[in-house]
Image (cartoon, rainbow, N blue to C red; front, side, top):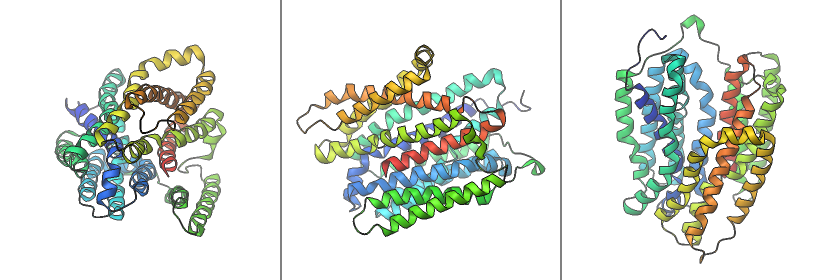
Length: 408
């Protein structure tokens, strides 16, 4: 049993923070065409605003455990909320795309802690008999974020302005900071027990991720590609140096023995390949509908909502489906079906009724949910207890990196 009984509103605070982060991850997509018009940028270049956020999340999430042990969960969570709110204000006031990207990086710095820190607090504040119930309560609002995000974003852009998709976070975040300082337990490790953080490994891993993502993103721009090639070579060199460092350091950020586990190795590769294709759909579809078919932001929001709604409805069915069909068969046939659906999404014309897309996107949402759940479970299934923490962290980072690479 925990020594101090957690506050009764603690699960609500944690659910609010995760919901805010998940809502923010999808609310931007339906607003991109209007934002591009106001910022005098190409709509296709607006991918930088999405990539910068996802990439920052991926890079800083591994720091969450160390920062909480070193400074305490209350301080880390409050500062994260503050950064998230500050980034939202900066984004709403951005006069151009460059400033918006900087604001999204600041926002990502805060958002990177808004999911792992609540998970850590739950594990330390509640005993095992309560943990499952509380975890389900906290996660359920987070699942609604992707459903509401495109709709809220579409209506805010259409009936107010795109600035409100960022400003909506400000009052929620300020309330969250106040409650954090009042009711958040301050878990931290004793100074003598704080694990060493491998700065060299982190720098090399981050350099590799940023360089390769920027290399792919800049390849889409017109002009000579020598800069993109240089970035790619630098990223590969950083990755090689990371491997050499990790061979000699048993406490590396991500130990190489993780890749000796066959299911983990295949799961990481499969997750990356799957998300490369699927991550771009929520980004490209609103651009496609609004720019090519002259649809409104709210209409494109309603079109995206079935993807997240289907994913939410499919969750309870996944376990029984996999137990009957096996991971192998589910992943083989589900991957093929996803490929067919993505191809079919390229077929509609300006005269195609929008309602015809809804069943297709609902099916895509079901397949996505099945694919991600099966891949995630398979990835960590055979890890030993000593590998679970670093393996789960690498899987989460891999997911965010694949999103940024897919959109790039």
